[in-house]
Length: 53
Image 1: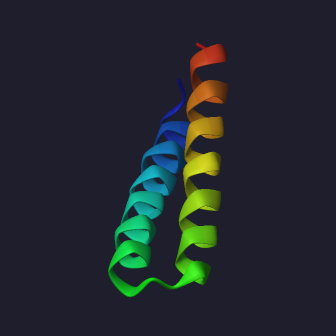
Image 2: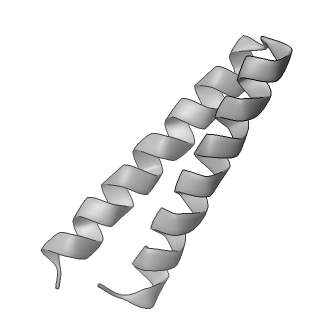
């Protein structure tokens, strides 16, 4: 797993979680979309990183 992919996966997942928390606190659907997208990017980057060992 390359460090760049690992960094993207970690960062995107953290952003997704933060956006999710903000969405729950504010009830703003824009944050739900942003958080969900970030989590998908994070999970995808994780799978790419794991498959390229």
